[in-house]
Image (tube, rainbow, N blue to C red; front, side, top):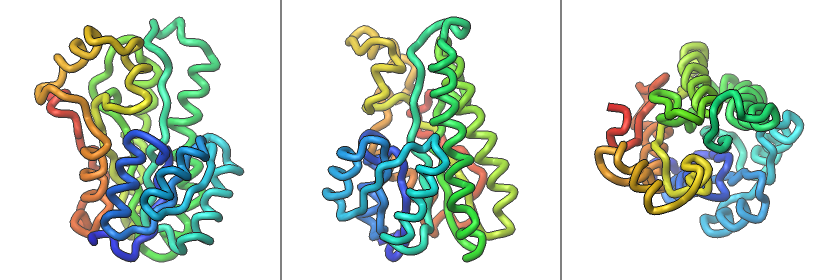
Length: 246
């Protein structure tokens, strides 16, 4: 029960890594708000773990503000914020990615971190405590070709994590990030371009431990960074990647 009594918001909690994190937090005693643009998916996970579901568009300021308000009403103080919601564009030469796809990636992967901070950091600072976890990617550390603007958005998230950590440390708020390798999530097919045995084998060949990240892997790492066990850890980007970035 390492999160007993804590209130947490997990964005993108309706599937994949977000669902894994939400399940792990709930198992450790947290009151979890499962936020997702897919309201049905959020409700399914929330019902499973005894949490609260909120439909949110993380790239829209009014929607994020409404999420924060609903979370406070439902669970009280928000002690933990996990910025997990994310998208990618399909693999393509950088100059061929459409402007709409570029804007969508930056809106969801970048602007959302600003919007959730704007909505929730003031209350964390006022209480002198809090933990923010940004789900970045190995793509922000060791970019793959043909995912240029997705790579760049995750690189931004890594720099934002460190900048947030430095600024918020005097207020008692810790900010860290996880960098998973490609995992068994709805985004896997988009990363690979096509989900075939041959393409999976190509991706797995770049991961020394020989498997993809799982929602459970991310849940375990997130639990550590958001718990009191990591009270001296801030500004860290933890690679959960089976050795991919070595």
